[in-house]
Image (tube, rainbow, N blue to C red; front, top):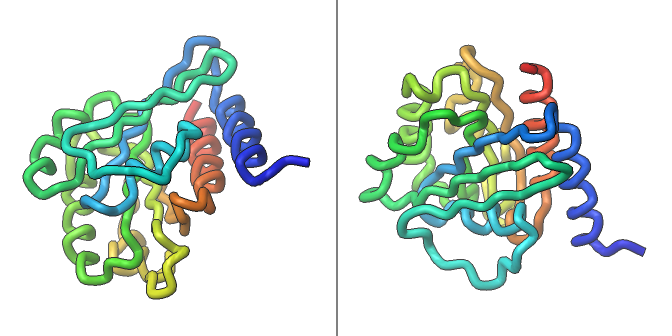
Length: 190
């Protein structure tokens, strides 16, 4: 009998197999959001690493997940205010933007909305699909994914595919569904 980790691993491998279009295909994913949104926890969960001790990212983390010759390169860039001006150095050749929002931090919804809207104006990210993870849904006072979508004004995005997915990076909930959306979206572009 498989435990949750086993189910998560099998599901992620199946998604990666569907993403694979050629033996050496790479997909570059940029993982952004404000500090403390849960980006590194999400990245560690994708890489099937322990998430019990996660420290804030001061620069960037890169993890590569491989399956059947397919490489999923995920770039996790720190979200502190002093680091955000450097985000633009990582935009080129991005296939998918994953934007992580701390659903429990309602005080920063306006700030995170502003940062996402600025990202969507960037030429190097034009037409790049956007997956928004409404993270920390396991906390009682979290805003729902629909409330986050409204706060981020996602409904006005018309120049690219986008999706919002409720998740809990620490529990691994909702991540598989978000990755499935990426697989379908990127697969339909090929």
